[in-house]
View 1: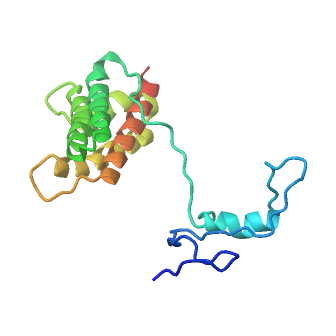
View 2: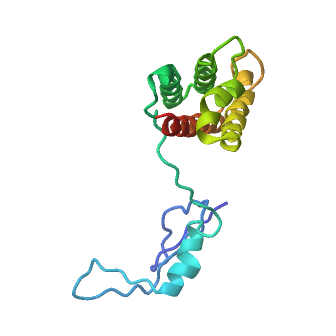
View 3: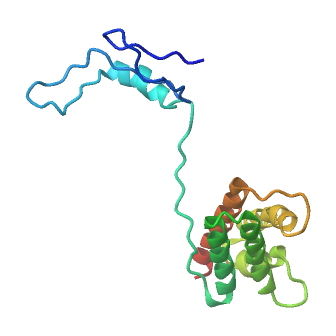
Length: 186
């Protein structure tokens, strides 16, 4: 049980609620008397106490570009529209629908292949490999086919849980691949 703190007069203060991060209490704060809005925190206090209390050093901040539907050649507009639908479903917290639309992204790409053999591998071989080479084409193929493990499971009635993290991963992976495909096919 959390005990209430006492103020300087010994009277009980408000209930102290536990925090998921270390709480830093400031005592003996010195301010510039000419400007009461200035707060001086010694560098050692900032580095040794405050930043670690906020999770610095225990977590990593990764910045990714905002997920957006990239401009694609006309032949791939349906894939871009499916990605936009996935993002829309995600924003409504409908993660199963986001996964379903993610599957449509890869289906639109594979359906652009010529002939009867329609697959992501054939799409990469037919459209990407002549421009970017075999190694890069196979990397895109592996990435897009990797998303199929999620989209196939998430598109069928089963026990697969399409949660927020999984849907975000899928959308970001597809957006990354469509951005790259757009850049090399323009």
